[in-house]
Amino acid sequence: MNAVWVVESGSISGGVRVILEYATRLAKRGHKEIIASLDYQPNWFDCSGLDWWVFPDYNVMMQHLKTVEAKKIATWWKTAHFLKNGAKEGEGHYLVQDIESSYYCRPIERVNVENTYKMGLKMFTPNKWVNDQMPDVSWIGQAYDDRFYKRMKLAYPTKNRVLATARRHALKWLSEWGDVSRTRPVIDKSIEMMTFGQDPVVQFVGAHKRHASKPSDRDVVRMYSEGTVFASTSQHEGFSLSPLEAM
Image 1 (cartoon, rainbow, N blue to C red):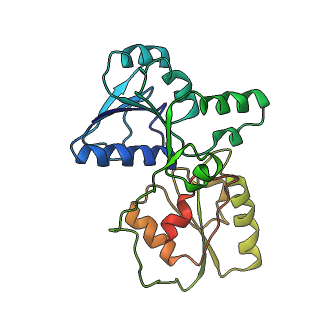
Image 2: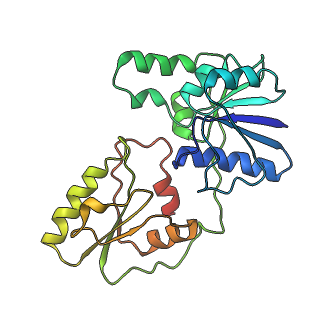
Image 3: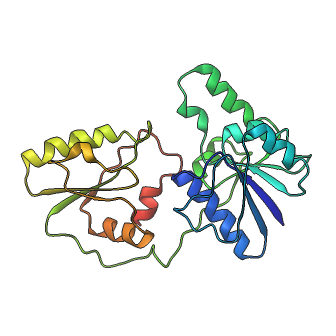
């Protein structure tokens, strides 16, 4: 089975990681998996076994994809919008990780997103909530790696540790975490603040205690197991990785 996953970028995000997990695991089973992107291959994920194609824009990408015999999978509403011009009948698929109209305030933007769900692409999701809202989207349960995520004896730290992710994205509300980290240590000196993620929390110097910029999966599991509380500041999560990781 040949498959082309259409992405805009390989930037760090849970949604992109889900795509790369699907593609690399299928490649390990002997399938030919291709990423068609407007951006270069990321260095934060092992993309071994994948062909990574880079295009200057979506129009050039779709002209090329017309010549490729493969299943073609849109992974975001904008990629779905363009994919209708690059896939023959029966080739087009759509990975719907979230109902993405919820991200936009302007009605016209919401309509543009919702129209992609009516294009006739074969839709599937790893998110049961999406399937509950749109039953015509097939639910394919998400897997997890039991080398990292498993029952363990919790090793709580001697201090009360509040853990949070650090990412400057409109939906992640990092500023809310800043308010907490500035005020709580003043009230209670026993509380230790810790963040992990791609964005250093330099603006919280003094109140903020520790930050891990590039933790491995194993490091993330350890931080969850040692934390007293995980503070999720996200305004919205499509597939909330934090509870899954915390398991």
